Image (cartoon, rainbow, N blue to C red; front, side, top):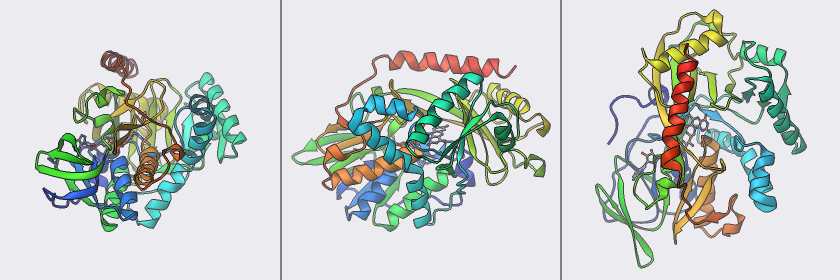
Length: 424
Ligand SMILES: Cc1cc2nc3c(=O)[nH]c(=O)nc-3n(C[C@H](O)[C@H](O)[C@H](O)COP(=O)(O)OP(=O)(O)OC[C@H]3O[C@@H](n4cnc5c(N)ncnc54)[C@H](O)[C@@H]3O)c2cc1C
């Protein structure tokens, strides 16, 4: 079922349009994909390129999950420093993962270019901004490691970062030249269009309700009827429900909210003049960007409390914008929304083989544009005979986070307290 009101700014501002194909009950597919976000749609595109007969089913609309609600920062690798990723993944997977996902933005931009996706691309990098002197020290460690790996990342001092952002509120930053920004819903719908043009069928408003193995094939029950498939990929991530036992216990769900102002006039041209997307080093992360229509977007971890015109999150946004850009004056907002993120205890994503020919990539910890795209490509390779040992991550059996039901409300309380404190 598609929602009537936009789920995010991007839902209404995307030039790429939504389309749905008829869902043909009783059909058999090589691959059935559940979830119409970056993971599901990239899997569909790459499977279709390999001549597989593919059906995507999405319960709501394309990009209904994190994919249509995010900040649009096309980031490289994970938000863990590369040295931590290597340490946790070991000497085989660590360097492979960092190399492949370091090239993730380039791959995303190449798909956008190839399929002419209309999604407001900027390729001027992203800024990881130091919220404190300690934060800048952390960035120095990341910089040293990226330098050692020969990557196009610059450490920038306070004066230069002030010019680049238009404020002296930050202590310095890491400018990652590999990265950029997009309209994420535009990219999501662009992926859907590319997958469809390559032969995939994508049906929205269809919810998978049960997965059952019969012989070598999967029977997929939906609220519209049943289909069968040789393989099933779940791209449901933080929006995972009860379709597969315990999968929603594989991560801790947290919220992240955004407010977008109405387009600002030329008086805001000094704010992020090159339009890099920015997130900070604070433990409760904060982000800013200026979109192609000069709207300023700010957001942080937690639920949207209130709405676009009033309430705690509205006060928080006013306070943040006043603190960082005091000359901008009063803001009027166009949209406010939140979405869910799937956090894992070690901040690394997972690839699970839930049963034979039933896979999922999940737990992106708030980094999904490149991650979902790259895992979609990996899924297609896996389903067409790639040695699983060549994947960017080891395939593992499902493991749950027993503390997740406790942690989720604790995090939410901390995020609300943060909004309260920072709105005073
Ligand atoms: C506010 C916010 C800001 C973020 N900012 C960034 C950012 O700047 N950069 C970045 O890289 N990442 C960011 N992320 C993370 C990123 O958006 C996600 O990691 C990514 O969208 C996950 O994509 P996905 O395709 O795996 O899952 P999703 O996009 O969440 O899609 C899952 C889909 O599965 C569908 N579904 C679930 N169950 C069923 C079922 N039974 N049947 C049919 N369909 C079903 C849902 O309706 C949903 O559409 C952000 C996330 C949020 C919430």
